[in-house]
Image (cartoon, rainbow, N blue to C red):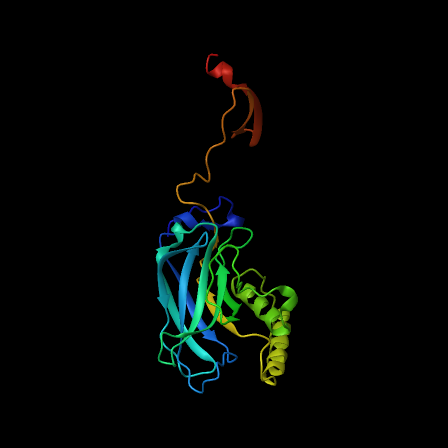
Length: 260
């Protein structure tokens, strides 16, 4: 894969404009707290890409799922749009539909996630999105139904899930003894969760594609590493002397070189 990689070994990354591959992600599952009053539900998830609040490309849908709750699709979705075509305000809007009524379908809930974070890095990995009941996926800027859960509203299990997500993406250093403590805390939290019958809110879990390196947004056609303009004033030039094995700094007048 072609990369506009950062030029430092410790900071390797891809530029989004160089990723000539379709956008991919998994729709994993929706939790059990999606009851609409019917004993038998047939659900599917509709996925739409928005750019600057406008739908872009063709929407995609999961297969029907009626063996729930929870409703597990674990289905790979591939959009017609490529990563290189994304802009900074790109969002994925999800809508869960129930077609068990035999009509056009009832909206169960919706959630929206932006594809780039505040640092203009492409989001990757597993995301637990809050579903807003009876709301369709909204790709406006800003969205009225953000899927990201505020930190002050996250439960203990959600904090741990977030840490595990960062760990799996290599953003947290692997330390054996600390990993064991985290796994132990997660098991305890899961036991507490299993004793509850209702979640604080319904949610949809998706997994965004993970690249080998982080992906930084860069608009297609932009010259990210353009050369610095050369001044006609005196410039300080560094030359490496192979005999002395040390750099020599010289002040060179560009005007004199140009015969000005």
